[in-house]
Image (cartoon, rainbow over all chains, first blue to last red):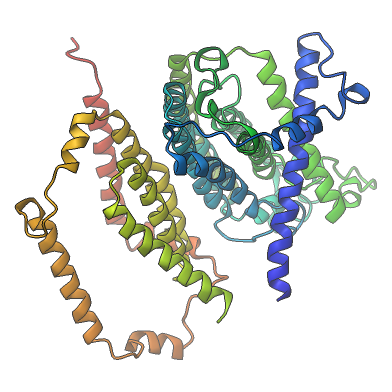
Length: 357
Length: 182
């Protein structure tokens, strides 16, 4: 029975975290947009506009359920649920701190790749169910983009996994710090198993993994339909893309799914490439900074701090770069990212055979 | 009745129920999305056979790939083509229904034969494996074993599949080329 209660408490806790994160992230996004465009952002509601997003969500929650008369009612109502659940399940295998993970499975990474692809079905459902040209065009563009960009994401993750030799995200995070069961080498020549810190992270374990992380980051931006890859939403051409017809709490769920997806790809990149819960501070001689800053509380702190930093970079990019054209988007994916990811995968294999073994 | 049993039957009912609904529904778009539920429930059933890798691959390949392709094909096909599907006769013995009728009856015969020859006991190889303790536990790392098997025992089928996929890829690239090129 206690098992069952734990199985209920953990998802509720993660859901509350995502909801709180979304409130915070929307405020941060608007403030960052304001900073980039040299204005102040929300200032009216509360001190520095702090309760602006809470007011927004309260407004969304009390709105009427509006379903277009010609829409496919069932698909229209199901789509936000499918989209949000697809992203939400992904959090079940993410480690937050040493052994602090909802589901410690050997297939963790593969599982995330699979459930995130369900997201695409939800978007198609929303686009088709709305019975609106803009929604359908937005959904088709979204799918074309997401299906294409799943390939560089997958290849870059394979390149990293070939070095780690495990798909378990908990084990992957263990391999990047002072608690590693195997010796770690900085760039393949300097043993840092007892020094840890930033030198033990995967992006510094082999020189090509830094490029792999950049590929992963760019492709994951496209996966969550963020600018400069927001062709599916493209307010200026398609009104709002697949969620044109949505309002009220259904729109709130679509919005929640978008921010949850941003956080999911950020934390996934952190766990696989940026050391997960491991501290960035190395042991320097007698100054055991890495030993002091490792543990449950510190693990949570580092994971969340690193993920928020990555989310911040995502927002910074959104407000700095203009939107890609559809053909530029596909050229970038098929002619730049995928060949580069393939080369990195080959280097990973050689690196594993020549340097590590 | 434990949670596992309830979940197993929930997945089974979901798979069979939505499959029945899928073949009887008139709305093609909804039928395609019902196929998603069927495939998803099937993946859930694979988990109970400790085939977690197969379950996840099912979702990744069928839901993330094949189903999206089907929905795309449906959305891009014209309306008169789709209305042809709906004008098929609904009598059981009509000529267009004959192949599917044959297939279904043969499959039913196989199922009935299996049911009649089932004696409610475990097969010998299963009982033998249980006796000498060589069973796969839920906590074991199946992926490592699968990797070894793919690269040793099943390396030929594995490579043939990869060549087959390569051929499909080249064929797709060839078909999608615009007109004649010098």
